[in-house]
Amino acid sequence: MKELNRIQGFFDEAFETRPREERLKFHDHQLVEIVKHAYAKCQAFRERLSAANLTPNDIKGTFDLARIPIFHKDELIELQERNPPFGALLGVPEDEVSWIFMSPGPIFDFVVATDENRERAMARAFYSCGFRKSDKVLNTWSYHMVPMGMWNDLALRYLGCTVIPTGTGNTELQVQILKRLKATGFVGTTGFLMSVLRKAEEMKLDPRKDLNLQVAMVGGEAAGGPMRRLFEEEYRIISGDYYGTADVGLIAYECREKSGMHLNENIIVEIVDPETGESLLPGKAGEVVVTSFNRAYPLIRFGTGDLSMTGIEYCPCGRTSVRLIRILGRIGDAVRIRGMFVHLRQSEQVMAAFPEISAFQIVVSRPEYQDHLKLRIQLKEGSVGSDILKRSLSERFRELCRVSPDEIIFLSPGELLDKKKIIVDERTY
Image (tube, helix red, strand yellow):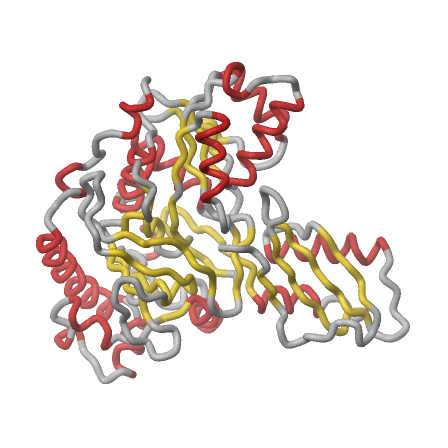
């Protein structure tokens, strides 16, 4: 399959290229319907709307959206603790739920099999990147508890691809699978794809000649742009990025132009001032706030905690959706590391299990091709930073936060000066 054929065309041309005026009318109609549905079926949303002195009759279109208070991810954690398991946000009977996933927080996310909008949206993203029906694809996202592996799997098979569910780790085995099965596609983090390619070179293979890898959809990590250019220039692998959350699914995806990410046509995305809640014009940085039309899980004005900005120029690829320029960082008390969110509350729960610890700090950097997670641990007077403590702390952190620390440094009492800044992100976005 020639490269030009991979990056041309549309998966759903009428939907992706519809005039913006038509899409706005579609969003207006969908918003009115989902607000009515959520108000009738979801106690948590009904209470939130009532607290703002609103009823569904007050929401007549997207121009009224700003009247609804923003609902943040941290609030979702608290809501599910008060109203287990789904925080009174389940919009369908519970016996219709097909999958339940657990995101860091912990947050329980759920999916119903009858909702194909999520799969179809991700299929559009894969097609835009260059995936086609004949591809055999390594899916290296995790299938355990978190939804990413399953979502990619369902979307790739919806597109018609053959999926090889490998998960993360075992880079040498991943190389062998790529070679023996002549796999053409890869999905996962940018850092893990680089690890697989470097492993192939260590095995005396030339990825360009000895492997058949042609296309990759990679994301979940900051500063992935330079690495994607490296994939294309050095390894001749067509690559693309996508952006989403476990709660709402796909938010945006790249096309062949790589000049920002097209917004998922089936949701509403606002850029909002994190302090005032005011919607911002294109070109202004703010929090990404999403409204989903998912009747099973109606998240309306859901604050992702991610910072970005939009551009309204039409893309030469022909898609008419507004684009996110890039992800600029995070607000709030969570940080995304290797595709997983690490929350402050979870980190505090980890540390509370060890009486030897008086204070801690999480430092995230990106020295080469992967996110690097370092724990700076200040010990209490008389405590010793033993190897046993380090192993126990690492295991406990992995269990609760779903990522393993790369480095743990023990500090003496008083050595951790900036105790208030618990999460430090040193990566360049």
